[in-house]
Amino acid sequence: PLDLNNIQGDILGGLPKKTETYFFFDVTNVDRFKANMAHFIPHVKTSAGIIKDREAIKEHKRQKLPGLVPMAAVNISFSHLGLQKLGINDDLSDDSFTTGQRKDAEVLGDPGAKNGDTFTPAWEAPFLRDIHGVIFVAGDCHASVDKKLLEIKLIFGVGTLHASISEVTHVRGDVRPGDVHAHEHFGFLDGISNPAVDQFDQNPFPGQDSIRPGFILAKENGDSRAAARPDWAKDGSFLTFRYLFQMVPEFDDFLESNPIVLPGLSRKEGSELLGARIVGRWKSGAPIEITPLKDDPELAADPQRNNDFDFGDSLVQGDQARCPFAAHIRKAYPRNDLEGPPLNADIDNRRIMRRGIQFGPEVTILERLNKKTHHGRGLLFVCYSSSIDDGFHFIQESWANAPDFPVNAVTSTGPIPPLEGIVPGFDAIIGQKVGGGIRQISGTNPNDPTTNITLPDQDFVVPRGGEYFFSPSITALKTKFAT
Ligand code: N7H
Image (cartoon, rainbow, N blue to C red; front, side, top):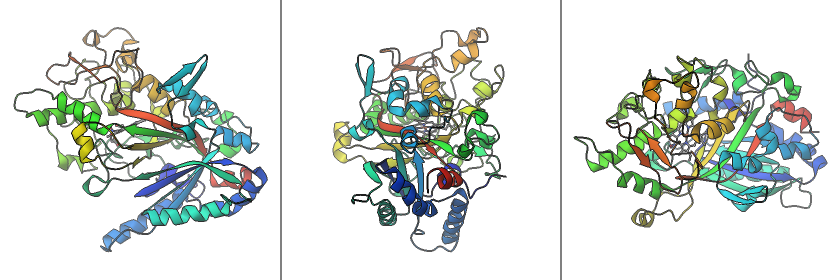
């Protein structure tokens, strides 16, 4: 069985959070850092700890007690540069991690500038600097998180003459207020579909695929790179961090200006349908594969049903009447498109455990009127996997950014007539830099799957920073990162 006391809590359970602060740091004094780590490690929330926290939250709700359970949970993760700084030179066998995200940004398709061979992404200044690690604290309110972060800073002497780390930058995420608390800024319910991990998630929901732990945790059953990795990497996981800004008024304007025209639909409903078809779910979370023309909030709220679908034989039939091939959830996790016939491919190594949180204010009245973003907002995107090469990096480059995916995957085994001439287009939510100008997606109109819709030049999601990290096990923290 998995040793849940040895695995950091965000990886398997997810830190419970209404707010979360990511504190990015550089190690400035290695010996002192390792000495401080001995005092820091007891603060790290494990996966076993998360199970207890969740029970406390459940009990609080059951007793109908007011407010939230006070909580502040801490995890830590290191970049490749951080490992090097600490004298840990083992190869973790992941090119993306070793390269670092700043240098990977060109391949990911991030906007930026090229000078000779050097590409510099158009990121915020702190993320263009070297970052050694990130400490993150999640909790019920700002007061709980700030207090905990202060305790942690004191341990490392941040800002004093005895400091062992220095702050590069910090970013704070907050779930959205009121009814939309579980929705991301475009308005869609998020956090519905993550894989179930064997030996951790005992009762997967219908439609929730179970994967072996080694697809998320290094050197566990399923990790194809296990043999190449040092022993201390066991039960650690790679953390991909992306600082993603969302152009919400511009996204809304696009939907409002391009309603899908169908008999019986008002203009507003036509716009909602376009949004649903771009994402693959209605704002409520209901999957369009199950309910293609009308939202179904009851279905959306029912975990027994809201993920219980695949795409049938629609791909090989060239049929986009239910879910377009380029819908975000289909590009990012094509379910049986690849796993079913004719490919029968195993894509468990492409699964990621998503743990994001929103940042920035609600859209203001002025922004709505001007149809223009004036305040930064978006998603602190975080995901875990036992390989960034096979997980986030691959999904972004080879699926989301690739206009012919998933059609190309099927036709590589021979042409299938229904698919001839169909180019799905890229993922309108996260797809980037496509073929120097063709910014189209097909299949947005369920009645006319051959028409393409052209997206504006400005992407709706804009990356402004990020890094790849490794979240070591508690044993590794104690033996390799502390004295
Ligand atoms: Fe996505 N969105 O609001 O449109 N995502 N995502 N994502 N995403 C999902 O199923 C969104 C991003 C995945 O299992 C939902 O839980 C936004 C990146 C994967 O069926 C919604 C941003 C990557 C899934 C969004 C963003 C992914 C998924 C439906 C950026 C990886 C699960 C809710 C600002 C490269 C698919 C749910 C499945 C679901 C949105 C980023 C991947 C609503 C706004 C960078 C694997």
